[in-house]
Image (cartoon, rainbow, N blue to C red):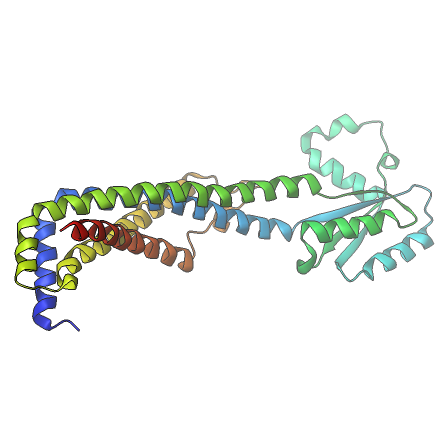
Length: 301
């Protein structure tokens, strides 16, 4: 175990290094900050896409259009059967008149184009909402399959294509996050390694003297490793700060509502576990880059 004098020596060496080659350390921290900023940007996009998908899921409905020849008694029986599905949270019968009135309201000032038409051109329908646990693509498809087999239902519509495409976008963001992040981490480790090499070469005489007087390898390596840790934490902090500034700037410039996309209030910054992940990755990059370079150089000497 290190003595207090040795710990004080390590801290003094690190502080001296940051004073003497401040811009080199700043450049290394900035490089890590860029890497973590890009990785954190993908995390931010992924988390908000997942949040939006969850929010949209509560508004996803299935529309089952009834055949025109279905009598009122059969409609009530059909509605009762649909409500008995374990996946159904609620279903509501929409008459032709109600559908017509809603269609006219949606057109607003353009509703005059419907002059001469009657409500009979629109079919009656069932508006169906699923329980939260059954709002996945597979569960939706299963319910739709059963509805299409019901007597009296002519057509069933639900946002199948939209859900598939959105799921592919989310999957693409996840893959890009790790693939691009992997390349950036590898490049950053090389930069950190080169920085440590320069620091070792600058202190070559000091290190050789310490080896001659019998200094432990841990005492020689500790200042460089601690520098890497500090660089990683500074890079992570800078990345989080830039992400926050970007997030605040973008959300403040968005309109109060994006209609079908999202309300501005629904957009959230990184979750605490994601912030810890960024900080942890910064710490690991700084530490690992220093250790790898030290291992190669000290082995030569």
